[in-house]
Each structure stands twice: as C-alpha cells, then as structure tokens.
Image 1 (cartoon, rainbow, N blue to C red):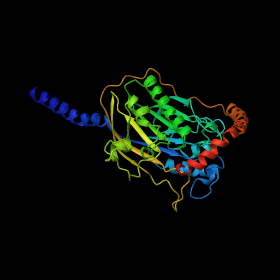
Image 2 (spheres, rainbow, N blue to C red):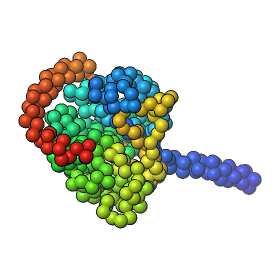
Image 3 (cartoon, rainbow, N blue to C red):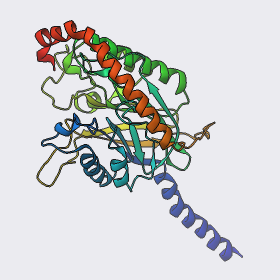
Image 4 (tube, rainbow, N blue to C red):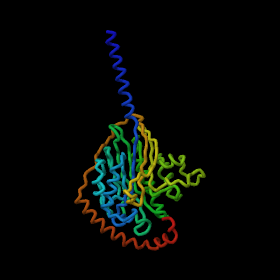
Length: 356
C-alpha cells in the first residue's frame, strides 16, 4: 500500500514538473508590431520609391515582402487603390480589416494579423488642413483604426493604427495637435478596460522638430502612453530642450509606436528597428521606412472575457465602388475650393520651404 502511495506521489510530482513550466510559458511572450506607409496614392505614390513603380505592382511587391515577416500585427498607411493586390499576397495573415476604399473615400489604413481581430472601429479626424496647401490632408479621410487582438486564448490587447495630419507649417501643426487630443479622448472614453494598449503608425511627429503639436501634453500624459523610441534609446526623455536628449539619434522618426501596460499584461519595449523590406538590389517602394517594434509581454492577471467580440464585417464591393465615384466628384469640387488657399500656399513656399 505504501509503495502504491509512493508511486502515486512520484507521478503527481512528475506531472507538476512537466505541466507547470508549460503553463508558465503561456504567461510570457514576444510581440512584434510592424507599421508601414505603403505610398498607395495613385500616380503620386508611383514616384515615392527609389524608382517608378506602378501602384498595383508596388502593392503586390510590398505585400510579398510583408508576408515574409513574422510580425504579430501589421498596420499599413496610405493603402488605397492597390489594396487588393497587397492583400492577395499576404496569405500568412488571415485576419484583416475590410478595405475602406480608394484614395477618394478611403482611410488608407488597414491591419493584418495571424491572430484574431475583433471590434474594429474606424474613426476620422475631426480636424485636417489643406486642399492645395499644407500636405493636402483635407483631400483625405485620415484618422485611426482600432482593434482588439487576441494574442493567445483568453489574452487580448488593444491596438490602434493611425495616420496624422502632415506638414510643419502652423495650420498643419494645429490640425495634428487636435488629432492627438481627439485620440486621447477616444482612448480615455473607450479603452479603460484594463487591457494593455499599443498605438503605432505614421504620426507625422518627431521630437526633433520641437513644434507646437506637443504629443506629450496632448496625447501621452492624458493617456499614460509612453514612446518606445524615447524609452529604449533616449533614456525616457521626451523634452528636446533637455541637454541630455540625444539630438543625433536617427530613430526619432515620424513613424512611431506608443504603448502602455494594463492590469492584465505588462509590456516591455525591446527595440524599434527598420526591417529590410527592399528588393533584391535594395529597391525601396515607398518614401517611408518600415517600422518594426518588438515587445516582451507578461500576463499579470486573470483577464475577463470581453463584453463584445465582434468579427470584421464583409465589404459590399458594389456599394464601395459607388461611394468612390461620389467621393471623386466631391474631391474635384474641393480642389476648386482649394484655390482660395493660394496666398497661404505662396507663404508656405516662401517661409516654410525648409520645413518640408
């Protein structure tokens, strides 16, 4: 009898040693987040790489390059008319956002992941500047796209991909400042669920510019977000006037990743790098470098099941095409209206030329 009990105890202990490490392993992991402005504006984007490449061909090439990465999440900006060619190549990323349309009506933002995505929400900026001046942001529907990503069974993280107003002259800076404030309000209103949050994309902001858009006061401080570049490469400094700020760093770019840990997950940023998404001879296909941010994450608590888990709805292609035609007409009239900006455009060229 004692021998039997001893054998049982040994088996129990052996089972514990075998299973506990496996359970512990599921509580930690590596998270790779990639963002890329794919220059998908028809004709304009054709000239934004190292050589001219037609929109659809460029989208397909970029799709193949992205498909070869092992990212957990990919957010793309300026993904307009060539989207179906990019999407067709990304077979390793079965979970994705429905396309919002071409350059006339689309947001230009799409997301791809090998993990399930829920509760997608597209939001347009309240303020944008410039039909002919600025960076023509008023001719777009820029904004951000939110999603809830399931990293593993029962482990979720909030993710936002964005594209902010561009330009460095005063009215563009004011619009971008308002973008940051709008995003902060969205986060504080909708994402107080205790889950970790990552915000990535084309912010059109860098600390080196030292402009009045002030991402720290208008977005980071109100939401508790931290900047990966600042934390990993700049000693946590975000004040450009601080003598200790690394003014020579090349990592302080307009493509950024912000993050905050949550009650159920701790995020630790490891790196922000530029993956080699180029052709065989180093060809570049956009005017932006891709941005790969790596985190380690630790699940720190038992996470409640989200109250809503809604999968992305399918797009009605016919309706999308009809809307695109209507938006194209609207854009034509907006360009006509934009001629009132000519004095401001001249001012830009004369006084802000060095800023572009």
